[in-house]
Figure 1 (cartoon, rainbow, N blue to C red):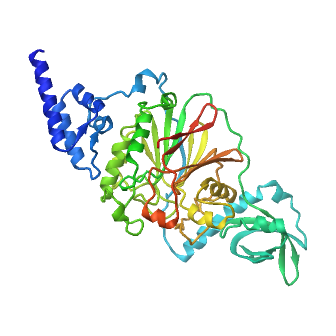
Figure 2 (spheres, rainbow, N blue to C red):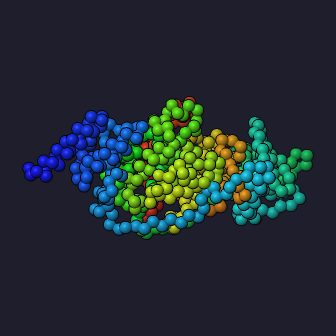
Figure 3 (cartoon, rainbow, N blue to C red):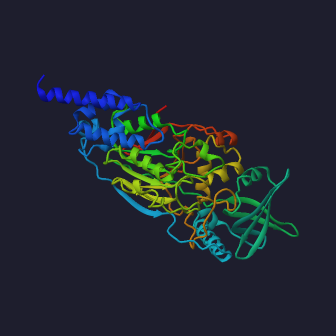
Length: 482
């Protein structure tokens, strides 16, 4: 061995000894990466700074811990060997939530609900069945906001409010009672019925705004879109190893390389971090207790994703953002590390975007906490069913005054006035997939184990499952990283 070779070997032994004394071990891949770097000593000094600033320090240093520190670009295995064609991302932002400043006052709320009513009334009046119904002295067609709902053994009574006042409507027929049981407070519906003197209106049918069948355009170009949410970085229950396995897959370092090589977009539906003070005694379950450091850690992970994958992020209720819907993007000062990533697009909740001529509706899914308990046969184990109810209602958060805080913006930007090809949400920590009227409905689960708080609430997460859509044939695949 020549003098230079002996010096390199001596340096590497010194590096290995230093890391070992600090309580770290090097994986073979990490060791080779240091060995092949231009300046191993400088790289390791930066690595030690990085590791010592982490509250959740790894025992074994992996390749993924080192790569973001290397100034020289390192190609992942798929970059040269498998990515035969360089795709340019095609993203058009149709609408991003939280564009208005909010003034909370009785007048602001009146204007807000009036706008909701008018928008959904217009959608209802565009339906053929609503237009075709002929009213007369006895037969009536009423469009209104559901002001109240009471269920008894033999009937369901609701009150519909519109510009003419409040109308009491009774549903007595067995099938109609079953249909009426799905009515939510504050949503806008149309009821056909007969006026009965001294009683009110006997309902004969209920029409929701609903979405019309979506005719999907065929996409010839190959590519995949990956959906995830509820990462909860900073939590003791964040599944670090499984999430790192997911990152490695996106880099082409794990199985399913054929799919990974064609991933063009990653959509994250909120709760990037676990946040601070979100639920009682949360601090006991945090491993990173500084919100700024939580976002630094999040950016560290996302920086490992190949730059030719466009990452779209909306906020969740655990993120640093306004806590009312519609929600502007994550605060720039706190989430600065994410904003610094070149391939990241930060949007509000909800957001309508167009990718490859397909319309996406992305929301965190906070309103599912209100919808699931009041709709028969909807459960937290199958969140996609409740998401379909939101499509029928044509509203992201129809119920007001419960767990989902709503901002009285001048316009109701929560109305689903654009019919999506794909409706994506998270929040409930359980993945679910369905299709309704040609629209794919996806809830993307979580990367967090069950917390004590979730246990007390009876929430059983289903983590580590990632839905993926093939743009060439619109087929959905789920990948399991457990």
